[in-house]
Image 1 (tube, helix red, strand yellow):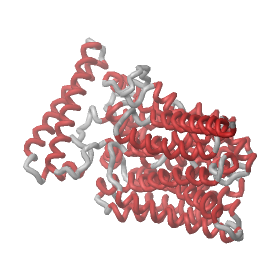
Image 2 (cartoon, one colour):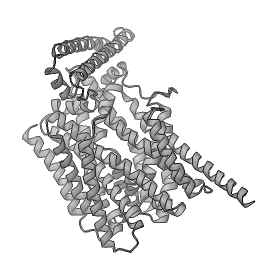
Image 3 (tube, helix red, strand yellow):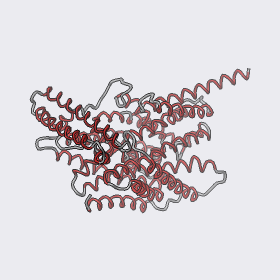
Image 4 (cartoon, helix red, strand yellow):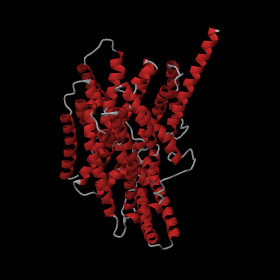
Length: 561
């Protein structure tokens, strides 16, 4: 990185932090601090909802996911528009009618305090872990690529977020997320057009799509009923709908975004704005990854994009064998370019397309062999390099100044998502646990101070989680897995509250505990792809609660007779 990159990076981040802290200083009551004074317009809500979900993991992992597996991951988001419409019709009017600060307040009026507290605790556990991961994700990758100290990076990202989130609460989160989304979209569009411009002369965007298609990267839809396939049209529409319904309808980090709206209409328009833009946005980010794949069809790429992997091999007995694999990869890429040229020139199209696919298979086999070799050399090094693909491209190919901007994109995304999470964690802790369980009444000033204190505490805990976390198969999957373990259960509790009026509070409480244990066991033993855990948990908690309630009703009738 050059001096100009550091200036762009530091200037962008400091402006966001200082602007957010200055613009929203001095909240006088809980309504201002937690709900932002209910001043948010629909476009602010829409961008804030989008920024909360689009963490740094989205911009690091998603292009790498497309590089390796193609566009199919976009199916994960197909259920989101369906969920947005349901939330606009049912959830938002109810939350506004009850004038709640958190989603979980409603559960006490419908059930009881213990059910409200249990659901709030489930949220605090899963969102507290996720907040740590949203800090850890960019930190570990920037640490590996740039050689920065991992712990220091975790602390810096965490402190920057804590400063303005503690200062201004929900309003600070909403205001800064508009700037962050502007930086993110600007950076990603610039990166996309630069990738296209870096392709060889004569390789237009349409031809780049042809190359990606011949390589199997443009297969967007999979209508198969293969239950073992994580990403199909059906898992996205069904499992994705339940995940999105749980996340946007019952997760306080999202609920708090639209509870800050000026009116029901503004909140609904904000979510519909997100419903219209989210799938195209994810499609575009995946397309960036596919274009990076096409770029590397004409340019040398490392066997493994994680720089730590190369370091581990160089200092091991496998260095010579690794060199042989690198030479093999170079040979494959040379042949691939020949067949790509033939394919684009309409010379035996089907034959060349088949040869390109065969060479991509050989490419994958060489990379898998390299992963196995890296594992033998040092089993502490992460061999799954999906999260390193895009950052490797940025650092090795973008011009000076733009590297700083793209790093600012990654860190802005981390900050925006983490800020929403800390804000929601503090609000839930204060409103659902602290305020509800202390006997004496406190002043508004006291609860604002308590909200700031718990924001600080959750920020410190998130930094600690980040410092002790380990890289998973793919970071964007890890966040969704954590959500899927808890969200189905929480959504089921809310659906029982909304629609199944005969179910009693004790039955719901017991069912929620049993369900959470079963879902965790099911995830651990890999009973099903994680997306289906949302549907499984939701149906399970509702079924158990209804069975327990019916049993209790029958028992009480027999007893009375």
